[in-house]
Image (cartoon, rainbow, N blue to C red; front, side, top):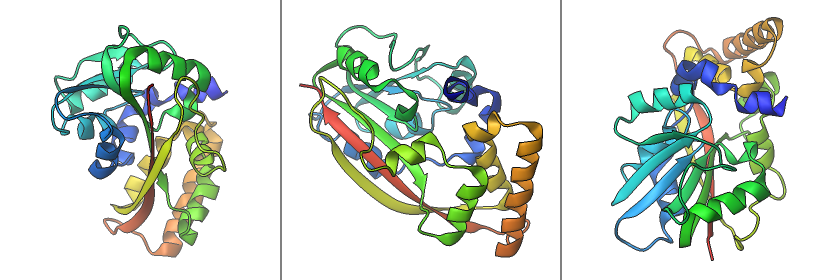
Length: 247
């Protein structure tokens, strides 16, 4: 079931593109900060529709390549971020030569990988002194209505990992892991919130009846909040990033 959920997103690329937020540029820049100034080649792994890719291509002197296991997601990425080389692959089997890049970054993706195998494979393609960066946008459930929304939609592997006691498992040869978080909010309409929900792996792989019940429960919550038509509500997020330097 986990494998089915991990590879389910390509069936809902439009909802993923519309419903998922961008990444704060400061958080993306922080992941790459240990690299020396000058040209740097960055691989965006698990790139999806290019949400993280868009921030990476605006970083100074960055040459970006995208990797994802789903051709449908890469096709959407090509429309959103034209000109970025894109390759089918996974964190455990990267279609890149040894020591080919200065950094490998994953947005909303490390919770789907086998961490020991992925850590070793990422280290293979990163030059010594390069960076592995992991980043997630997680809804801030300190807000009561957001907690209720999560209860309706069900929590995700990403939320369980990032909010858990240990965080992501980054294995050898990487050592110390730095962590930092940023708080922000995204204005959302009722329709945008529904599209965000429809981009989640649990709902993509749920039965028709369960999907319909989740939509009804979300609408009941939005009615209570007085969210109608083009009205918006600020959906609070905490973006959490991790970085580790390759020895």
